[in-house]
Length: 319
Image (cartoon, rainbow, N blue to C red; front, side, top):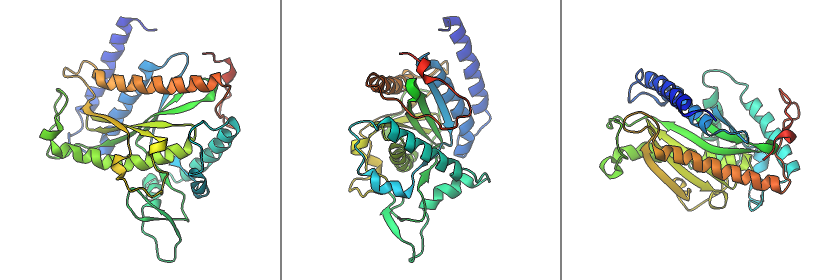
């Protein structure tokens, strides 16, 4: 473990880097301009929590991809227990190959093209199955649904297990709100600030639904919405989240079972992160690491690639 002085030096270097980034973008810039600094924030906080037992990755513009053939099977999945190793391996390999295919279009609008596939209104001759919880528009059978979160943080642990720590959606600050470092904002005094958080929830729901389908062993998923330099964490459980395209009488913005925020990412003096932000990271890591330990004690292992870029012997890892 790094000494206190080494940690402090690393933190100061990190904060200087982030402040330089943030000083060069407008408060009300488009959200894509925030990605550079948010990526640095996510990567730094992940690195502080890594141990010899697990690593944490930050994946910008990750894709959650679901084959249409899997939609009929989604409702039949037993969410009360993790899928066995063989089922996980098959699902992971199939999904990853499909994801690679979906990402072959590398043009400037490639992500938008894939994402909008399921949001477009199709002709009357098309066949439909289900209604998108994001738009309320029938979704065509001819297309496989996919969503691109701005970032996904994953925990990679013993036995090739992977867990989703956070699905992260980034939004710009509203034009009529001026950001300042300070105490937790009182939302009743800033109703305009809740608008981007509410908008993000509609996107996050579908990302979470596809993540549950992509990772059948997950029983709960946390999502983090970042608006400017404010954050909110939403907790979704498999049993309380409808499957993708499944009808629900509830509003998509209310599928989460718990939430925290909005709160500042950085403390008032910009000398570090708020205790609330660091606590949300610790909580997520603790929950997911414990889930994996339980699986390992039961002798269950995760999936590995059939033809990995580099080999790694997960059997050498120990608790």
